[in-house]
Amino acid sequence: MSRSISESTIRRLSHYLRALESLAATNGETVSSEELAARGNTTAAQVRKDLSHFGSFGKRGLGYNVEELRRRLREILGLDRPWRVALVGAGRIGSALYAYPDFKRRGFECVAVFDADPAKIGAQWGDTTIRDVAELEDVVRREGVDLVILAVPAEAAQELADRAVHAGARGILNFAPVRLRVPPHVAVEDVNLVMELEALSFHITRSGSNGA
Amino acid sequence: MSRSISESTIRRLSHYLRALESLAATNGETVSSEELAARGNTTAAQVRKDLSHFGSFGKRGLGYNVEELRRRLREILGLDRPWRVALVGAGRIGSALYAYPDFKRRGFECVAVFDADPAKIGAQWGDTTIRDVAELEDVVRREGVDLVILAVPAEAAQELADRAVHAGARGILNFAPVRLRVPPHVAVEDVNLVMELEALSFHITRSGSNGA
DNA sequence: TTGTGTGAATCCCTTCACAGCG
DNA sequence: CGCTGTGAAGGGATTCACACAA
Image (tube, rainbow over all chains, first blue to last red; front, side, top):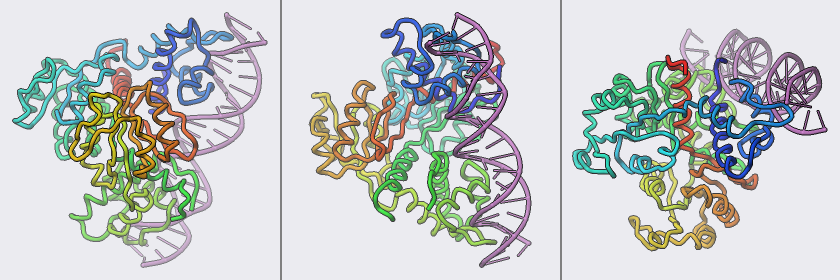
């Protein structure tokens, strides 16, 4: 289809999908770009433009069929198949993510958990045994892991990313505050909690009544 | 100074600050926009443009004084003062955040933790007692809470946001997958982990060799 | 009539290129 | 010289506005 879909468009597609799913029960048949925009982030024109990059899913004068648009969005986002996820780092963030119910609900299945700490290796999380991170490559290969969640200290992140990629991982969700270097066929998304707080700090400081 | 600083600029300022902090020890005196760009996300021109929105901190032919630029960036981001943070939701994500060492290091101090679950209320996390969320307004007011971290289910998020804002909170870090409605003087940053995974899914699906 | 799909216009962000200061 | 600070150019992304299909 088309080239170069922007990162913001992708985010909005996720929003639309979520809106459709909460709509499926309540509303009956169709949504307009207007309704979708109200529940998402944005304007009706933006919704239509976003969708137009992938085809023409609507009916003029009517709107979009909820069920069909939902299916198409899942296809577009690649959610029409299960994803095999490995979690690297069994610390606090790792454990929160492991139990995050929305992941499974969306088809992201955690098939392995790793840590470097001998005190943690061998422990059980539900039915998952925490493995030595030394086994990373083996397990990624054997289990066909697609995505790796890196919840490890900054110093360890690049090396672990390299190893996961080398073993076949195609995407990395990175919680470490470093910019990872990866080959072009590998996708990386960064989550940096401190940065989010700093953004809040910035906005409040600027909008505040203090001229400092 | 100027108006309308973009969200991406703010993120980059955070990057620059982090780069400077790791530099302060190793390097001696000055950095060029080139070096800063290499460690951050971006290009030398972008670094200079970003900084130029806030003043002229560099010396031509020399670069930026590391220590001074660090100080200015902390000022710009509003990090030259402590922030009082309340954590709402003592679940797994909440507990991971509470212990997140980088928060304190950057001046974000968690002064209260709330939950609605009677089984959790009264429990101790370090020296913090988990409070009944019914006390939210009181405590936010009494403790002078600036920022609220919402790590609660989607259904509860908007109501809790309203209450926190009403009690004086100026910023919200929102982990619930809903778009919060807040007055214009309140800043919101969303963290949506499922969306990040979906973005990975999208990229991999598109770049993949499978035509499906 | 309603609401999509889409070129055209607009706005904003990034990149370029260079004047000017140290 | 070297490197910043910045107007101008370029490129993307949003918004506008309307032809057209149901």
